[in-house]
Image (cartoon, rainbow over all chains, first blue to last red; front, side, top):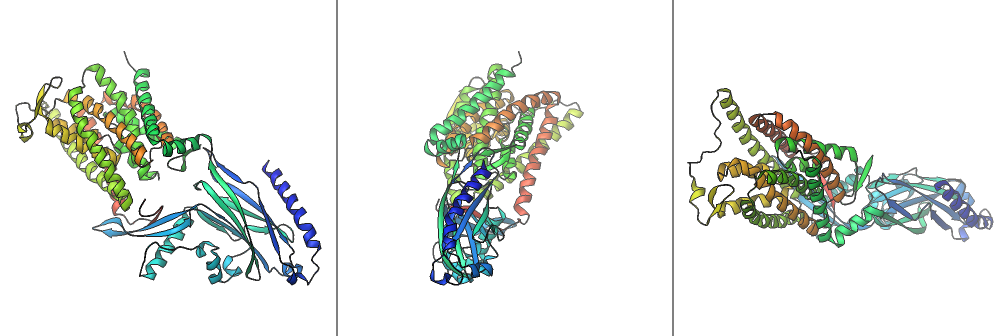
Length: 267
Length: 308
């Protein structure tokens, strides 16, 4: 089923880019603007009760690509999947009277809860760090702005570094510098891994096309990550009707406890 | 086989959770305790967020104390009046506890306080129980009568005003220490996710001099309502009761408890108490080590701002 979907979207994209390629004779590409089209293997990921993560495949095609630049590998593609944004608080422990406790904290404004990146090569080899920072592409280049004024910039750096490391280690932030492969001269396929602990909500697939280290085109595609069936019903109930939900939890406990004393009653 | 916990928002191995529930149920049946003081730390060791572990632990205790309380009710070893007075304090304490819980969570110190409370309470209670049971075992060896209750003795508790008569327990006692005890346990229920039986039972016996036969049944009666109330309030304020996790734990727990009871009946009272004391101490020490040992990572990250 999924393979079929891949084939269909591949065929669709091939159809899109073939005429475009034909119009670009060698050497004239600089006058024509390159285009980028992307399609995903799915527009919705369902978190089921046995969810253990998922793979997302993004297909893309370059239009009006300069064949000379293609041949010498001057085109680079970066595909990212950004999760819903929220504030994030990083806390630091210190030993106080022999016990490790949280003593310092820093909150960052609206950072994606999850972030997966696939690229044709190391992104720091694709573009300058400063311009990557400006467009916010790459785990090391995401904007991490602390809430409130923090005079000590060394401290900010330390907490940013800790944030990135923690997110990478729990799998919510991932990068695969080999994740984008060209399947033909102008068609590419990006594989993104969605971790088991991925937050639900609206995610955004973003594809960036770089030419000689310059970002030239950018495309977006929404992806919904939803809890399905019973999981969704439980989350909704817990947040929208918390009293009824709590009552139901207690009721289950009463039935279980009472039932056990009836079943195992020794008379 | 993995199962997704919708509130804890992670996938866990169902057999590990079932095993945990059954093991704790077995121990709780064997020792006649609710098991909340074991289940909450175990869940935290298994990476369930402490907020969810505490709330779900309270939910699980409801189930395990109901089956125990029913048994005591049938045997007539449950003092409803005494239980109700305890409950008044318990509900007030649980409300205050929830407020402290939310406040500490905002401050980022909740996990620390939960651990410290566990360490202090478990090691104190464990040490006291071990000492008492060893003394009882020594006495039993020398064939001396075991005297837990000294009815003639009066301490300061018995000079307080607002006295009430508790017919079933056959005592005449001030309501103040009863309500106060209920209150203290109520606070612990909402912060630690325990029923508090392991503190309430000794306090009732040694401090309030309530006859031993009604103590367990009455404390279980009170625990049902305080933990049920805590579950409701946790669900309403912190949205942290995981019904999937709680159901798996409860079902495994009540089955495990039946086998625990059978094993418990074969052991002598003081031996049981010594074993329980060792278990309580072990959990306390494990948590204490966690507080002192240098953590793998001194940083932690949480979704949300400081003000949530």
